[in-house]
Length: 91
Image (cartoon, rainbow, N blue to C red):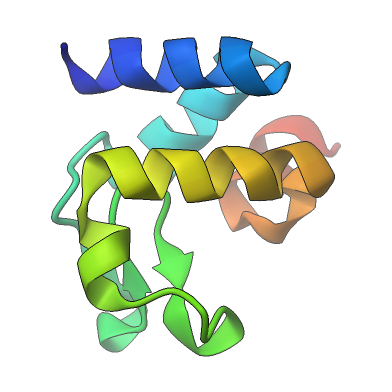
């Protein structure tokens, strides 16, 4: 299964907007699971900012399955924690 399909299927399970969830990941990492940004502080597909989420390890953030699951839970609760979500959808 490819990354895009995993994101879409996870969005369905969490009852979140799949297109918004996918576009957020594309914006954050260009769908590269090993993406690292912010001087090493943001990691993975959804660029999880590790200092803001101490419950997440770099290993979890770099694992596409775990990262998508964690991000879906957070996205359902508050998608505005992602800079890209704000950039794409809050105008």
